[in-house]
Image (cartoon, rainbow, N blue to C red; front, side):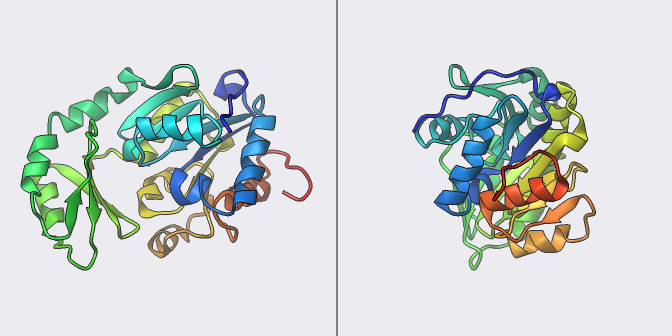
Length: 260
């Protein structure tokens, strides 16, 4: 089903804004739990805003919402925080260039240098997508040589390992959390009305950024260990979409129907 969301007011005027990771989080849990969350969002568009905060690229986000029955967000922080964009069924995903200026400046034209520096590095397989301000690899944890981390640091960039399966090279100081905060400030959304949701280490900066947060029940153990002390975070028992609903209820951020 192709959901086309109704037009609503600015996110700063919504009662609640969900800023969620996709894989394992918004897309996680059972079919029934995902349908429950998605249907609730669509039924409450006048009071609920949606931001995707994901490692996925804009093309994936547009395809997901166009063909998979996933609600369209109003905005996206994609590419592990290196893309900040508006999203709509009519225009797709459109980067907000003035919010990305610092990201672009920190990265420069580093892609070729990074790829050359990690060429044939043990345990890393280059992902074929031509990302704008990042380079990403599939990671074979058993074969991985951690000297890759030092190589990237010497270049002045930062590395990120998540789910023991992915190795991302990002501009220094750029990740999901700082980019989400930049977007929230730009949109003038009251931070206490934004819920961040995630499940792996590439969500760590988002869950740590001071906004109300939830680590869903199927979260990567390494993430759980890092965020367990955070007072503003709910550690959900339920997985994926159901964990998001659990946190909305726990923080009392929006009314939910009985049984949700």
